[in-house]
Length: 76
Image (cartoon, rainbow, N blue to C red; front, side):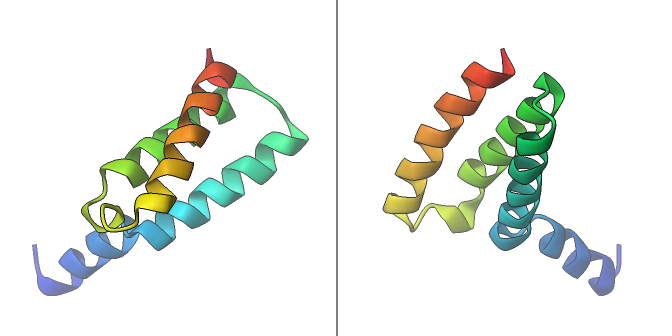
């Protein structure tokens, strides 16, 4: 893999990109409340909480953990 491909992988998994996907999915869920979308939201929240750059923000992590619990209920 070359440097360009490495930078794309980093960009695709950056917390900002994950948050953008999360925002899109939540807005989509407001229009079509399906378990499939709720599961996708859960997946994005889990990715965000596992991301090493998210560790330094305890207030954000607490909010994301609360969101994750709620979205897991919607996804079941």
